[in-house]
Image 1 (tube, rainbow, N blue to C red):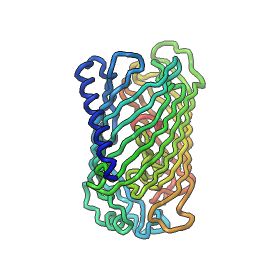
Image 2: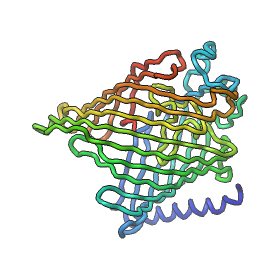
Image 3: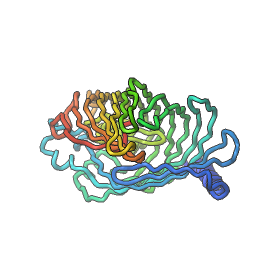
Image 4: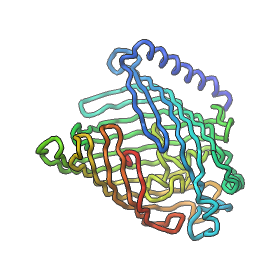
Length: 374
């Protein structure tokens, strides 16, 4: 992979130079997007590199977070459940605290736009550094036995490229969404991109995702406070990683420009990071209601009912047999509140349908999400 290093470095340097030049020459066109994380934040700024139609858009971003992650395997590589190793639950189900830093730089090229939406291509470099804050000897011993060199943390550098189509509209009064979008992303993380500094990564992954929103009913508001709308939402995502060394960070997440929790987490009610597989696919369907405002027009409560399903295949280091693949499903209800166009909080109650959680239960009475699930 060393022969690829000069070309990779050249691309990153060009992106840095072009972005810095545009930022200095056209500061008035700067746009910023702040994304909350649990617990942390991620800021991305973007700006066109020229004042012409379909000009490339440069992006810069950085963030940091304190998070808790779990490692849900037992020493022979099998998935940890309440049945197969109840004596190990206290040792292995406890979450490990981790500090994480993120940074990125890239360029977006609009290809075509209409009144309905926009098609664009993108190229981006992403970096991530994570470091465990706990001395969890039990977890690390299991991970070492299964040959997971990034279990203590990872320095992950990757190039992302792909295309996306965005045609979603958000009602300025009710915040209800309508329309659709889709994205195809290829992520390349070779050893030659400094991926042996911490951990060991040499992998590529493909991610495809799509969302659609359909307005079902909107009441005629009698005043600015009395709004009500009902709409349906659906989301699907598939992710396949391959290569000599696929890190845990790739296996327990879905990729794309904005990575999300893997099958555990995307199928709500199951532990985030569980089912760390090389192939995974998930689908989510929701019925959302936006309810009349409380105290102010921009303080909107809401409700959501959902059904999630997913499939995984390919568990590295796990014994051969039926455990190498499986189906998941869950359902639940939630209450939401949108605060002053800044953020939406959703309070869920989940029911796991196909498997138990690792503590042997199926019902999670309370969970919180920053923003809608998709």
